[in-house]
Length: 146
View 1 (cartoon, rainbow, N blue to C red):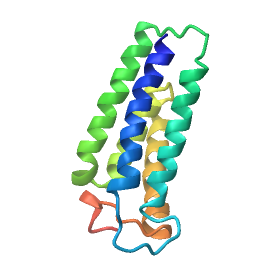
View 2 (view 1 turned 45 degrees about the vertical axis):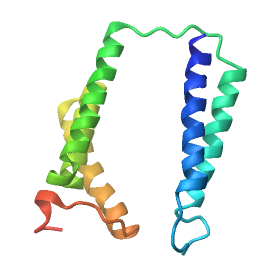
View 3 (view 1 turned 180 degrees about the vertical axis):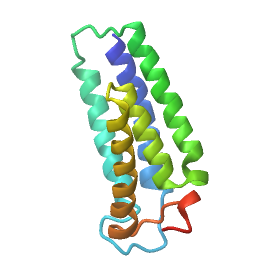
């Protein structure tokens, strides 16, 4: 029953998203065949199809989470909120390194590996997204060095 209720809410959200994707989003020009209008439309169709599938064929396995899992999920949501708040002031590299370090500690890695993973993710992620893909990422505290 919970699956069908979730699918119903997802279908409603998907309907709203589909309306926005097809009727609200209008780009003045499209420099790419899969530009700013096409991706939301593709995502909207996939969103609706997945919601309909769950509505028609729900999972029959009972899904129960323990208290520790709920606590970890709550901590993850708080960490994601913190990441979003610190993204601009600290910059991509530092905020991503901090988030990945804390997440890996939460998932059971030791502290040294967590710090190494966080730093590597922040630096390599900035290199890939900033230099290779040419995305505009916030530099934050590391602006003089980047």
